Image 1 (cartoon, one colour):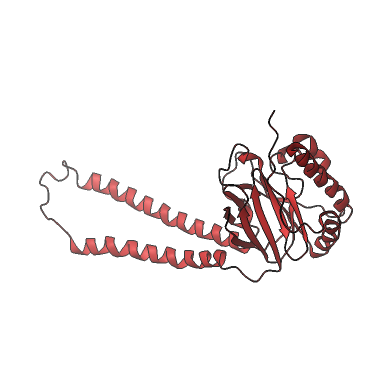
Image 2 (spheres, helix red, strand yellow):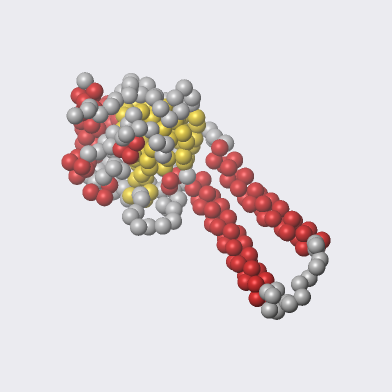
Length: 286
């Protein structure tokens, strides 16, 4: 029964791609938020929150680098200037008040500067704005469910198997990233996510959006994003949730408003009246 439910979910996803493709076939979405083998640094920022997070990280890294360089040079200077050979008679003072005041006040100033920049970023991330679109996100073992609260549609999102990648328009590099039914949103609109878990703790994370929110059973947490650029953005469950934790990716497709309206028409025909996510579905054991 479980295996047949999984197959029907995957089949519906492929069918949806076929039906929705006609709605915006002229749209070639670039893949923007995607992990790259061997790369370092962040994925391109796709929201204002992500841009502020990247800026804050860069500022803190610069401060840490300056401190490391200063302390390293100071240690080298002290080793050369005040070693036994250069100073056969050691000093006998026990303290230095100006120096002690300096090494107390300077760290305080640094922490105040970091706080002055980090708190607004935290408030921007945690203060939920008025939603243009509200989506309930449910983490299951091991897939995601999405319900568009104001549209009366909902669907499950499963990872695409290797044999279905090409049919859905992906290549081998998107294996374990692409899904059958991605979350689809319009560009420039505030999307509020109401996130929960159906069984164990999951975590909905899309790095390019600067969003990571745990999905805890019995609780509903909120997060939000407003994507700047149309494209495809990948994420992953980021809370260890069982044996197939690595097989529940997240995909968000950001469309223009016109293409989103076309997608919505097709989605309502396929996913109408699915107000709540389905019960957890597990892979059948061999």
